[in-house]
Image 1 (spheres, rainbow, N blue to C red):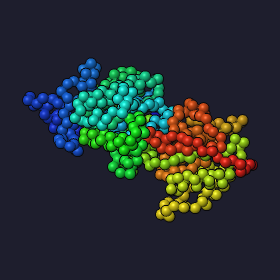
Image 2 (image 1 turned 180 degrees about the horizontal axis):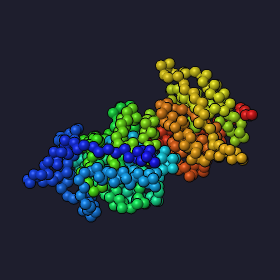
Image 3 (image 1 turned 180 degrees about the vertical axis):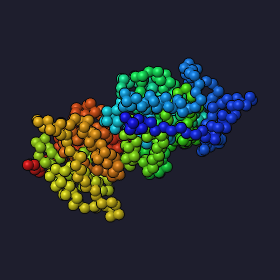
Image 4 (image 1 turned 90 degrees about the vertical axis):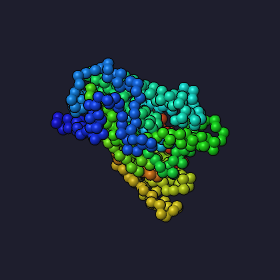
Length: 504
């Protein structure tokens, strides 16, 4: 029991910073008008950003739910820790994942990957996209001027849509059945400190309202910022952005690209990178506590920093996925090892697909197989296919993975239990799924059964675990998964099965 509590209670009291101490000293002066502010390290023109004088969402809720003042923020955090340490609630948690970053930095791609992966693991998760809400409200294809900070009316409309998105997310979290964990993803740019503070206040108000409800899952916020300065990645992302709904029907791709770059420049003029001291914004609100953490991804996964996320059980698989994934464009080829008559597909057929796809990409493709006799023979034959490209490239990687095998059917005497799709997902997650995410090049995966192909397809293209068994897998067909701006799209490639061999 003590080990369980220690896993859930890693929070320690942070000494007040010099900034907070000076703020408290000023409160004692009679001529000082109380004003909340946040000290910044990298602002463009000033080091202090003042909040609006009008009552915020947080202040309104705090007036309604006023409690006895406490001397230290530690008491509020201790109460939160005591509540979450209860064995009955340790397995349930509500997380608001707030995306931060300029357009074309991979936010929607990351959001889609997190959503699909957590659904595969059985977590209740949903994404709320502010851009989709804007387009649904009749503002699809709007010009770049709409995103300028100088356009005050458009700015107010953007803020309204973003907060509406946040409110819908919190309503969805509150509607969760008792005993379930939820992750709501706020997919928006959230590039200003004022916007992020307003999101924090709205989430804190929700946490405060649900504090008295024993059935409500504890709420926490994690900021996920994608930062990218790699010109190759940016150029690729710009091209993929031209296929979204804002540029459908645009006859000139160059005109669409010019307009999108102007949109990015409008966001760059008002962009304020996420700072660690923003996570402490609510610490001086003594009535309750809500953990706030952050994850920052640089250049599509070249560097990742995590802050105050270790205590979240639901966020743990999300963090491991972010450590594995990248934004390099590539293909995942899911091929069956056997045909409909359970005859092994000849290595020659895979060789032809390998050569054809490598000519299209002009680079070497890696191969992953299972450990059956037929799979080992395929791996031996494909490893002999020479590298016809730049000799400086890394040689072809051919792996035989023991974890890449179908579900166990169990035994009649009960000595072995049949595996469910959930068991198969958990077994394949680290050794197969995250490995595929890490590989930088395109890869051919020779799957020993349709259940393995269903799991991999669901991870890359999306499907909840409950409906994995209903996914149709075409026979003697390779599924070619190609990355787009929100995930992977699928096309089918027919296999020539005339030379298939029987497997003893």
